[in-house]
Image (tube, rainbow, N blue to C red):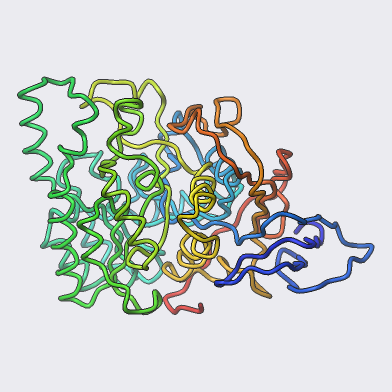
Length: 451
């Protein structure tokens, strides 16, 4: 572990409170919180005027390692994550190969241990091809199982379209089941209708009508009903519609919820009006929808029907994006700017700092039962972020860390900046200066919730 560090006089935002105080880091852990005197053996960081948050835990990324590393890899994308205050991430199974076996899953952990600057965990992929193998294994050892992104490999891999496979999973899986929720039958029918009118070059603005509200809502409603039937643990990924928010409840604390969901930041930031300007660059699945949907998602986030915020970070090369509709890849890079986007909403008085920390730091730790991360607590890993809420800067190619070298946010001016990011007590990013001596750690989790 690195040197012992004392962060002085920052506004600590944690567990619903904000207060000025000091944090002492020793041997990678948070040793003390309060008023602490500096001693000779401590490296002191003056946090005056800044806010200290727990490191962001991003519950859904696609870092492309192995097999798709021309787009991004576990080194480049974890570096971009840290630049954005993300200290831990959970990566999805749609790499090459798809992560459909424990051998491939373990190989991914080995790659990350050698390359990732941030802390990491990987979900097991599940599809029609391997569902029996998955449920025959000890599913409690997976942080989660997911079908997300596997539909890129072939049709029929969206579990929301396969009630019989979902039922089998819900009846037998001990880990959280996270799914991409769209009804493929509806999407395919819409694709055919628009292809008949426009050929292969469908304008981007029709993407949310092809991957429609109906397609999302019907899939989510069916999955929730099946999960309730089996009292299973279901998490719906990247919610996009106001209509779907009404399928979720806020009556129980998160630790007691069986049915949960998330919003990815681009669905809060962009709306269908932005297709005219950005075209295929903001083509995501599920699609960015209307301003009404965007507002409905934010409302559900604030009233706790939506539990966490993720990035769904999915880098592609510009060449892969700037293709006609059916060839343009879905997804875009976001992990470097998600916290900036949410802090911009704070500046606009649309969300509190405490709620941002709850949804980006505390709740992912609770939802995935992550051990000793996500909070500023004595004895917890010192994953921390210092932010300056009074700095103005503009996103450009020159300040991106993604391997793909572009962002749909280029030209956006933020009024906040991440100045310091600590991972396991190591000051990895210090006002633009990198220390890459230490790699991130595998995220420990439990099937029992400690939070």
